[in-house]
Figure 1 (cartoon, rainbow, N blue to C red):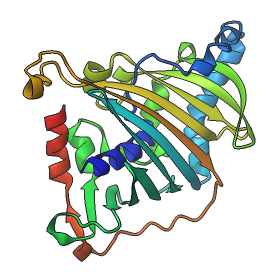
Figure 2 (figure 1 turned 120 degrees about the vertical axis):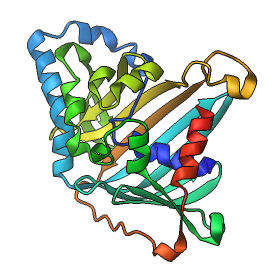
Figure 3 (figure 1 turned 90 degrees about the vertical axis):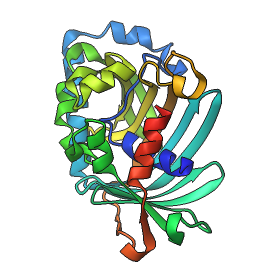
Figure 4 (figure 1 turned 180 degrees about the vertical axis):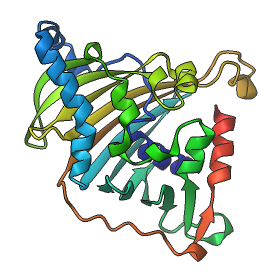
Length: 285
């Protein structure tokens, strides 16, 4: 289940909408931050327009190859995860191979359901595949299910960005492609489920995006610090202070238009772990 939870986080993080963060920024930005302060108001508006349009322009490509590198830290322990595969922006479906804690996990998302299989292992009931209903999990957290896995429907996210929330960092190459990098701050209150998210992550969600000359996403970085509700830590250690989970995730997009062959495994080979995953999440929070 730990590996499954990591895989779920990778999928959920990749949709941008549920990203929740602190105000930290990559070390490489420190030398460039002064240049952003001197930009004209017109250039700032252009940057805001570009970031607002990025998700729609990326989705217009319909599909892309994607890689995900993620590090999750909590209670003094860290887990590193990486994944690679392909994503269908229009349908919100994907096929990936995720490596976590030395184990390779085959992963698919079809019709807003996450399927995972660890070669050589079986889920409960002796079946090779387990599944988690992402829509059901999102609704339980107060997040609208229609946004899951569908960057083209991130209207609420775009509306939460204003001119003051976008800073152009500079030009950088991503996989030999020229891009423009932006630092973005999003008003959490404007996101679906924002009231609940604000309690856990504060008023803003910071991230970095790299856009190519066509305005499409080439890279996205999210640095998240999620706090459990006050007193939740007392369940495990009798402490009233909330626990924190820190996550850094970097996603790269390439080969737009690639083929994505995502199919649900046969029902007889799947165990539904949605309720179990939600219970574990509630216990850990």
